Image (cartoon, rainbow, N blue to C red):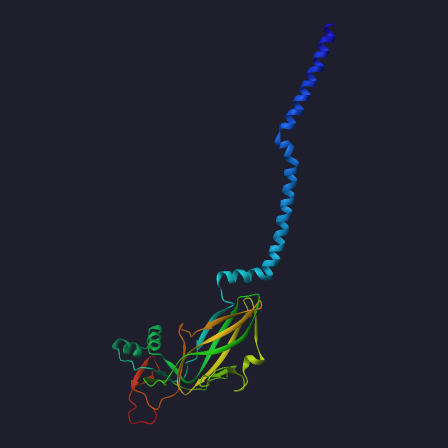
Length: 281
């Protein structure tokens, strides 16, 4: 009798323990949600991986261009602009009269200080000029469909001062030329046919192109810049190309006489000379 009672109590205890274990398992969120959470993690990782692949493909094809547009970056970068003044006479709109400026003109090693003085007096080449421009692409692909000289000012030829350079050779040839004396100046290849009517320039990202440009202007004094029209992703953008000092390019026709004359010294600097009574100085 006593043994049967103990066995019954043991069986009941086991049943109660099993029931409590089942209830504890049902109430444990870590056990009930563990498998779905693990599956959700795998699914999320797969989705992120797929999105990463799609995003990478989109960015490589178009995303970098979109980022550049949002940043306001131009489709091309003007990396280098140079005007060839070597062995060429130039003219100033006004004579150099300020004592400090005259001292800078005379100095053999004035460097950039003299460039500032000459720019302030609107130094210009006479009759013709050669310009080198280096452009770099900022899009996956683009096309330069046109570049045109844009005249900003047209005035009588400069007669303030003539700077007579040391000469010893001839200027080289160039790829494109523009006559500023024409009502609508355009770059041409043979003096008549517009260059960009038959040819255009294709660039890719980080690809560079060097343009050798020639300008003539004998009837007036001109200040001008260059306006490039660029086609990218079926839309056009305009980029302004300015002179080396950030201002306009300058070109002047030749005057009969000048109010002052300067001759380039072999050791550097510009020294005033008298040309009174001479046909040529």
